[in-house]
Image (cartoon, rainbow, N blue to C red; front, top):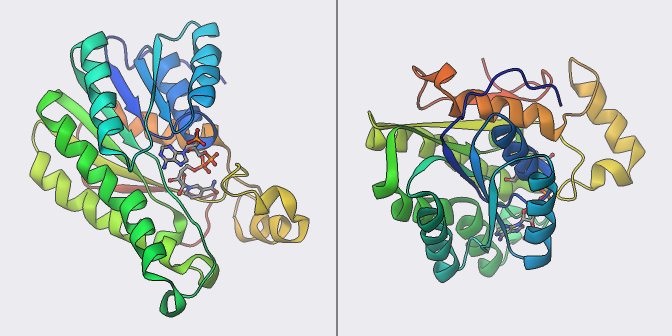
Length: 253
Ligand code: NAP
């Protein structure tokens, strides 16, 4: 990864679901630009490994186990951050689930609840707890999806929760201004564990690559670069916006 600037010197960033994939890429990018980074996910082993990888790159980091649906663990995430660093400048809400390919009208209520809870509600609850500790000039970034714009049949309700994040971005940008900017990144297709159908199925992968104008899948680094831009002072006059990072796959005008 080639990083030129140090836009986050002296800043503290929390990234949820950040022990692999896009979240890890975001933590690595922001950390390599000078931020102290708080890593988290459900499993201690994953947290320890991610902290080890970032520390070995000279990034100042701590790791906290936090299943975003667990109220105690969310509280602990904020408390551990404040104990160590005293304030928060950046929060990236990256956790999401996509547990089923069921159609919306066939979906069990428990699955509907889980999608809403992990993909939308827990980010709101985390921000409620964090808001009093956010500094002037702070920044929140949600991770939505290209699926937000035209939810595909195989991930329809997941897509709808990601559409909700576009609205949440607008609403919280109003509510948290002028102290905090709130923006969103909508990734295209990135071959992570979450999207393992991309590495498992060559036909699907080729078809998606063809749908992009740039004729390739995205990388965690592509997403991290966009998040770092929005979270940094380079985007000081941008709030309430969603940046689509999908290689040119059709989203909206
Ligand atoms: P990933 O590579 O599978 O990584 C998921 C991360 O989340 C892991 O660190 C995992 O660690 C953690 N995690 C899972 N459930 C969690 C929970 N309930 N609470 C806290 N941490 C949790 O996934 P990804 O592809 O990077 O996805 C990240 C975000 O990008 C999601 O919001 C997803 O919707 C979005 N996105 C992805 C794509 C894509 O093509 N990959 C496209 C559009 C949008 P543990 O197992 O230790 O918890």
